[in-house]
Amino acid sequence: MSRIYNFSAGPAVLPEEVLQEAADEMMDYRGSGMSVMEMSHRSKTYDDIIKTAEADLRSLLSIPDDYEVMFLQGGASQQFAMIPMNLMKNKVADYIVTGQWAKKAYQEAQIYGKANKIASSEDKTFSYIPDCSDLPISPDADYVYICENNTIYGTKFKKLPNTKGKELVADVSSCFLSEPVDITKYGVMYGGVQKNIGPAGVVIVIMKKSLITEDVLPGTPTMLRYKIHADAQSLYNTPPAYGIYICGKVFKWIQKMGGLEAMKKHNEEKAKILYDFLDESSLFKGTVVREDRSLMNVPFITGNEELDAKFVKESKAAGLENLKGHRSVGGMRASIYNAMPIAGVKALVEFMKKFEMENK
Ligand SMILES: *Cc1c(COP(=O)(O)O)cnc(C)c1O
Image (cartoon, rainbow, N blue to C red; front, side, top):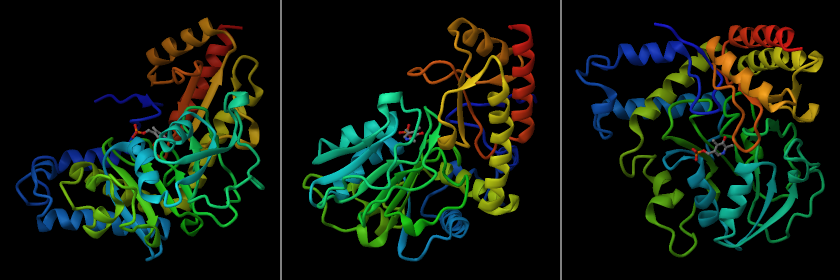
């Protein structure tokens, strides 16, 4: 077996222990005589799997009882529509546009009501987080929307916006479980799991119970109503059963690693190694304003497209994969999620030093 260091933005690296455990249980899940993939989602065995996953997630994030946890499908992108369909009671919502994912959510919301762009960082190719301490929040806004960690551009809200009492809705796909958070500051926190938690096909929605009602926009399909999924505890129809099982294993792994405080420390340590190098390098440069840098996604450039391409090619040959930047920005991007070991980041920096020497 030979594994490379995978810097993919998503689907992304998962803990090897989790993959090994899943492999061990593939043919016969704990004496059931079958794989979790082959199991009825109505069985007692599967019910234990999904209930344990929810309980472990609740404990990791200290999710209070007045919040619902839902395991849904359709990816983060489906939430771009589900959120306005379910929450736009006044048909008004305010969006802070800090990257492509926030922009897509903002555009989708326009189908259902009046979506206001109340702040944006598009003027500087989304390389910073705008000041959100005193924004023109609409008096009748149903919610204020952010993308908390901008996967493509590598920025992160270090401080949540002042929503002036409105519910905050946050897409946390690429920073989910990377550090402790205070759930009570959010009305909704959601994310596709394929960045930091598990295999593609699951999206986790954590939502204040008071926001989950039957009062949704006319025409909202049954499958896109939160109430349906909340009432059925994510078992209204067949859930993404195997994916949820892997997420459950990742929750256990995070617990074993020491929980979210320990994750934060581990992520800060990793990111520092890379950012410190970028700050002193004479060849590579980070593309993001220092105070808004993400711990998860680190974009960088040499300033020369040919050299960037050479770097991507040679790094791949050295066992460092998926370092090519997003097609919309170019350059390079290293995604260093929870499961990326420190050794992976050190190997990357060593390779960058060598490349710098050879290409000065
Ligand atoms: C990847 C990503 C998405 C899109 O996720 P899908 O599951 O592919 O729909 C949305 N938001 C953020 C922040 C992402 O990183």
